[in-house]
Amino acid sequence: MNYLKLGFRNILRNRRRSLVTLLAVASGFASINLFAGYIKNTYSGLTDQSVKGERLGHLTVVKRGLFIEGKVDPEKYMFNLAEAEQVKKALLEDPEVALVTPRLNVSGIVSNGTVSTIFIGEGIVQQDVDAIRQDFRADRSGRLNPDNSIGAAMANDLAAILNVKKGDGAVLLTTTPSGQANALDIDVIDIFNTGNARTNDKYLLVSFDFAQRLYDIDGAERLVVLLDDIRHTETARARLTDKLRKTGFDVEIKTWKELSSFYTQVKNMFDMIFLFIFSIVFIVVVMSIVNTMGMAVMERTREIGTLRALGMKRWGIRRLFSVEGMILAVLGCVAGALITVLVRLAVNKAHITYVPPNFSDAVPLLVDLDIETAVITFLFITILATAAAFAPAVGASRKAIVDALGHV
Image (tube, rainbow, N blue to C red; front, top):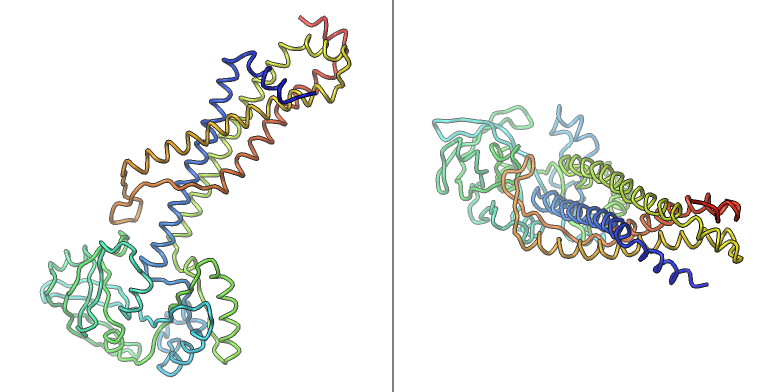
């Protein structure tokens, strides 16, 4: 018996009810796909913001204890010049390591001679940072000039507080790890948007050499590692940690996810939202199919009795209605996939922008195609729809043939 052919014919019996069910499945499937695509694009943007925008690279190597005990005695947990060179050499021997660059956090007070405020920032090697950032948000600027040894790039809001512009000078005052006060002049050679509202009023960048002079040290606080492939971050971390410990360095290596608290918080929030929406849509879709198939079973009880009288087995009745539920789900998902593609194109062409929480500038609202989620959702909907149609068919198939034929 051709159950697919019979299933299609039975679905067309009550076209209005079947159409409503198809629309429920299609809209639910499209909603899940569109939100999953938006989340995928958001995660991709957050990854770029963390790895490239925040200049975290993929891995950060520090002496064990820097993040806890180092807050009390930072000099003890810094790499001296010889250690930094040895660790860098060992890291670069790994075939997956593309770049190793030293970093030094700086903080203190910045003044224009009239107004003073706190600052936080980093000492960086500009050429290395260019390799990490690549072409990420070039409109934000924030570049240093390697030919200007006292040049600094200052965040927008910090520059506004100090009322300085490109070409103006300022003074940085800080305390060295040994407890001595030190002050150096800077030239403001660039003003940029950090992209983060929490840092845009206090952040600045200076060259790594300048940061060493400001702190009166010759080493580095940490080494930032860029890998050839971000997907190998965890395996590379384990391998490099083991290698450095075997060479005598007691280090800990943090991934970019661990250092970017914003990425972790946003991802956890979106995961919970997606689970919530996913659950609601599934309930709506399943209840629509249960209602449709339940009504179909009730209306066709006498037909079921006739089929049973003609020799169809109980499992045949169950299979027939299960196939109908599966067809409804498959057709609904196909329609939902078409809706997903059309809506995605419309949204991406609309050039919509918005300012997320804790961001200091607008980002585009884009939707990617999340094929993996779409396939999983399709399978879930199809299986649940088949099960939802199977349930009322079980009760109908158990009826005595005489009772089914006399059903009104």
